[in-house]
Structures are given as C-alpha cells and as structure tokens.
Length: 245
Ligand SMILES: C[S@@+](CC[C@H](N)C(=O)[O-])C[C@H]1O[C@@H](n2cnc3c(N)ncnc32)[C@H](O)[C@@H]1O
Image: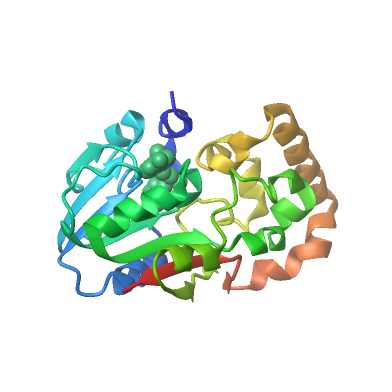
C-alpha cells in the first residue's frame, strides 16, 4: 500500500483546487489543447475546457476522482504509458517530491509533452513557514519533503521560468501551508490526514507538537509571534510554478 492509498481515503474532504491557484495554472498551460496530468490524484487543477488524460499510481486516489473528471490510468511518472509527443502540455501538481527519481519522471514528461507546468515549492524556503520552524523542524532538509532545487528542475527542463504562487489566507486546497493564517485548523486530525508531511513524522511526535500549538494558541503565545498573519490576505511560502515552454 502506498502513502496515498491511506491519505486518499479522506483526501477530498480537505483537498480541492483553490480557484486562484487554478487560474494561475491554467494560464501557464496557455493554449495547449491536450494535457497529461501526472500524479493527478483526485483531479484538482485539471482543466475542463480541453482534452486531459490523468496518470496516478494510487488506486485509492483513482477511486476518489471527482465524477466527470478526465480519463485516468494507473501509472507512475517514470514510465508514462503514452507515445512520444502525445500531448501539447504536461501538468504535475504537488507531486514531484513524491517521485523516487524526479529526473526520470521529468525525462518521461518531456518525451510525451512539449510544454511543462510543475506546481511545487522552493525547498530553500521551507523554514519560512512557522509550522516547520517552530513545531516540526525535522521536516526541513529531508529528501521526502524537499522537492528538487528549482534551479536543477529548470535545468532538467532545458530552461524554465518560475512564478511565485502566493497562498491566500482562505485557500481552499488544504495543502501543508494552506492554513498559515488559520493555525487552529492544524489541530484537526482530518486536516492533517490530507497533508503528507504529517505522515513523515512519528504520530506521537505530531500529537505532542500539536498539543504544544494548542497551548500556544490558548496562551496567546502563537499570536504574539505571528498574530499579524491573521490580517494578511496572502503570503509567499515558497510555492512556485516552474514553466517550460
Ligand atoms: C499531494 S497529491 C497531489 C495530487 C494532485 N496532483 C493535486 O494537486 O491534488 C500527490 C500525488 O502524487 C502521486 N504520486 C506519488 N508517487 C508518484 C509517482 N512516482 N508518479 C506519479 N505520481 C505519484 C500520489 O499518489 C498522489 O496522488
């Protein structure tokens, strides 16, 4: 069973496309008429106005794809079941850090698609997020949470432009930093169940650190340090689009 066969059971309770990020991703896909979505999960961020084929390894994630979403096949980035140049564009959203060999996945993507759009983050910025810096610092610098360095990613794509993806304070896609201004959300096990980072740390440690967060919220210590965030509309936590035309 893969990590996403467990996470997939409740994924759609907290994970769905955020409309602002979706607009940015669709703009990056440009005029592509056909798109392969690699590591597609339940279908977030897939355009509905053009042909899309989805590739996803986890049968549980596949089973939870939204009704009416694009046709999907079970498969991995490193062995895409399509002929050369089959698609105008490829999308890989919040998935590349899970690939055992991201370079071979990218080589496959470049084989089947011309334009490439990767939604990922800049691993150099992971300690900018208070959750990592103050509560789970062991998440920083681990290969399982780091995506590839963006410069290496761009190099492997033969050049790419990089766009910042600010995260809105009311982001509806419950990924790791989505609740940066709503710290109480992380106390909810259902929220944490949709975030793979939390599965990388021993359960007892996560529960202990979430109890520390609850104490800091109750005492006002969290707000003394970060209360200004509650009034901000959006924040840059290092999420990025890497776009290769
Ligand atoms: C955080 S989810 C993202 C799903 C979707 N793209 C989204 O934005 O909601 C990460 C996905 O990557 C998939 N994944 C893991 N290893 C993979 C691999 N080697 N190749 C392709 N996808 C993979 C997981 O099964 C999971 O569905």
